[in-house]
Length: 339
Image (cartoon, rainbow, N blue to C red; front, top):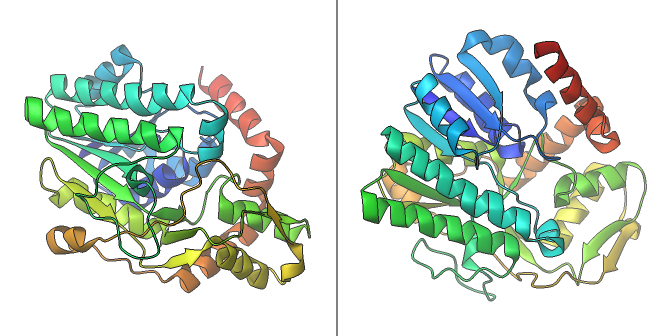
């Protein structure tokens, strides 16, 4: 397999590349990443050192038609997995435009370049947030109507619909995956779990939106990566697959778990004004993925949180570089050494 992974320097993309290298050492992995603030070359230092010529990094934008087309041809790519996206809801509320550009136009460009190049399969990685918000009961199914409530989720829904259209109109082999909240190593510290961890270890107040009762279904990133791999290898053309962690939990309980694991207490919790359009509850039904792909989460929330906190504790240099911005200087040095 010669695989193009877009957004491979991000949290999930980096974990996916490590997983594919481990499970498929004969694959050629090509990583295209724009290296926005959330892309970190440092996350892939070990992969670059170990994989040699089996791994290639290209700095670039999925919106660049000429670049994407050239990469597909130059590396004789068999399949594409599109992780590249702007993904932070709060940032999308502040400025929706970059989300529309990357998440909609970028996804369309990847689809179109792959179609014209005759690529065998495109896996488009999406999110449960396209479904909107649930009440106290029920779950999201693949045929649940899309009802996004933030600029971020609306941009992802737009890309999902384009993926469907490319399959229906052109017969393109596209598979869409939608996943619940990820956590694990290499997650950028603006997200809930690493943000709360970094504040807890410093004894700083932990800001919790609203009443803290917004419920999310948490999945350890390795389980999500396994789901995407299964969709790549076994997915039905044109299908949508939900992946969940079977771990529904209010945000406040996630925060309390972090406090316990870091030896802190609940006195650090501060409830703050809720963000606009904050979805109340997500819950994923992944029966279809279990039936057709053999997917099921293997890491419990308790185990996953222990592993995640242990990783951050063992990789304080990585975390310090991200928080200080030093990782950006590392990327500048990386370019100069290879220019």
